[in-house]
Length: 327
Image (tube, rainbow, N blue to C red):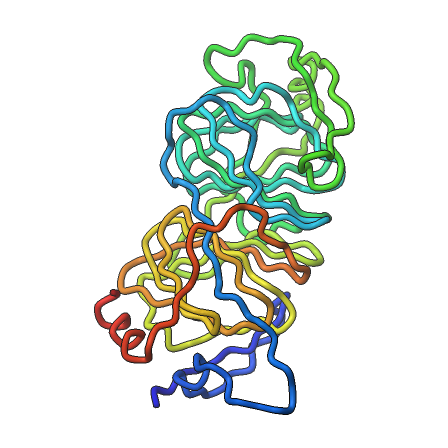
């Protein structure tokens, strides 16, 4: 039987994982018959897919992908300004730029972001977005959020915040909770020049992060969540990972890979999300470069978007073939 390793790991990854030798065939096999305990249904993993390239369409509200009482992940696309300023009251808002360009305008300065970059809007800071054939992800997480990755650049007080901008009175939307449906508190007009000029009165600045290299880079951490990026030139999938106290949500950014788990196998492509439950062993196989985002949470974050496909069972021979051909 092929031998692999399992890393039994735990959030917040302050200590090295326990490393175990395993038979891969047994690790992925169905359970043996037993009269000692009633086995419960364990559904296969499910992928959620959104297009990774911009598609022409009118402005639409962001789409929820995963959500709990304290965490929300959204997918957003636009080719214009968001029609209002938004102020969170209860969570930090972390964005990742998938494609296109976007100007973020805030009380802590304005900044342009491009694909591969992250920005964190602290709880209570008003912001608007101007997207140009834009797709970005939003992570609403409870604070306080600690930045772990290095700062690539910072926002600045600039007028105009983007070419063609003219000041106006525009609505400001204030939300509670995770800013999901039904969590609007109030919407009222605001003088946006006065709002953006606050950046001239404070030294605090919006920070842009841009991870690089073929490695795992953790970028943000709060008491229950970590967010980072995982990049590798190739992986033979002979090291499985099991998080004993947290679940993981992954988003495929670039390249393709095969996610092998105890609840089936999924071939992932850019635009795919997948949720790996707590205590489930998994590994990735890819013969070329692959990059994905990882959000690890000690609390469940259920899927709220419709799934697009389910994981399937592969034989040990099929998994062995993936390691040499990728298919």
